[in-house]
Amino acid sequence: MNIRILIAEDHNIVREGLKGLLEKEPDFSIVGEAGNGFEAVRLAGELKPDVIIMDISMPGMNGTEATRQVLKANSNVRVLALSMESDRRFIVDALESGACGYVLKDAYFKELSEAIRAVAKGETYLGPRINELIIKDYLQRIPDGLPLNFTSLTERERELLKMVANGKNTKDIASELDISNKTVEAHRQNIMKKLNLFSIAELTKFAVREGLTSHL
Image 1 (cartoon, rainbow, N blue to C red):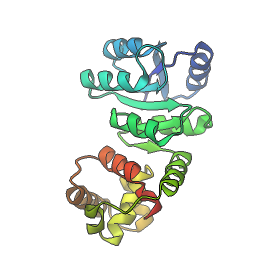
Image 2 (cartoon, rainbow, N blue to C red; image 1 turned 135 degrees about the horizontal axis):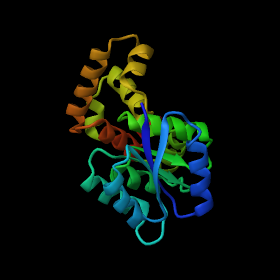
Image 3 (cartoon, rainbow, N blue to C red; image 1 turned 180 degrees about the horizontal axis):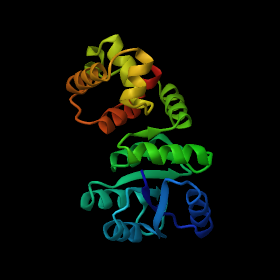
Image 4 (tube, one colour; image 1 turned 180 degrees about the vertical axis):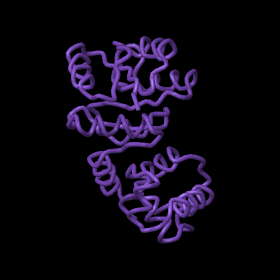
């Protein structure tokens, strides 16, 4: 599978460095570069990339707003947020804008390449450090309790939701729990029905917002 990538990053050196690393991967193809959010929106429409690596903090139109506009006009494009910001609010904002994943700029290239391949397949990617940051933030906030609809989940459903929130796909979950892919899908459908959610991305955002990973 050849993954066509658009890089949206306002710092030239960072953008050139990313391009150089990505071009070494045999399944990656760089189709364009954008220096700001406006260019990202325009090029997304013209080039139809599979994945956009979107810097969240860009002048003019930031990456979050650019993501909204890109996906409004190009529903098949996958956006991977790239940021120095590890604050939970930035992560949630990026996911709510439609981004399929979030990677910190100080991550290793291996994590970035894994994230690109994951979102290209329609999966949601939150790396281990992001999950750790979310859990730590949750513990510091000391919330009063979990949403009532969360308590309706069975122990197995809670376990599966944790795996979904950690970015694991159906095959990985089935293997780890020693169940069939169809059983995983059935559990996931039940979870979404109970939580009144309609996609894996919404499940992930639910877990991030509520800090549920620390309770599963």
